[in-house]
Image 1 (cartoon, one colour):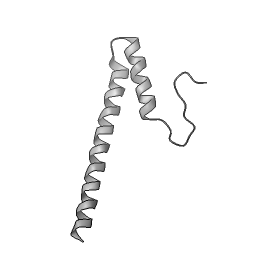
Image 2: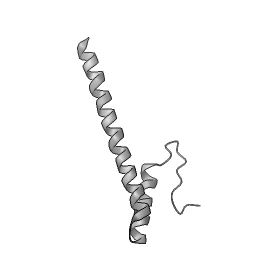
Image 3: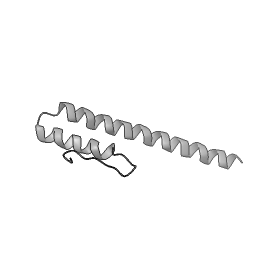
Image 4: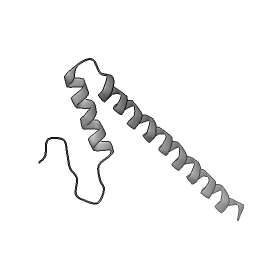
Length: 66
């Protein structure tokens, strides 16, 4: 039984680390989109944010699609 608890704990730890890394990535991309010195870098950062924050239900809207 302790093996099952260890696996659950390890899985929760891995999920937590993944969530922190994802949050750090999104935050970095958002700051880059706001503070980048060139318009091309800001556009690229917005594209990365669009990919990271896409709606997973199938109706994805990308920048420039109307």
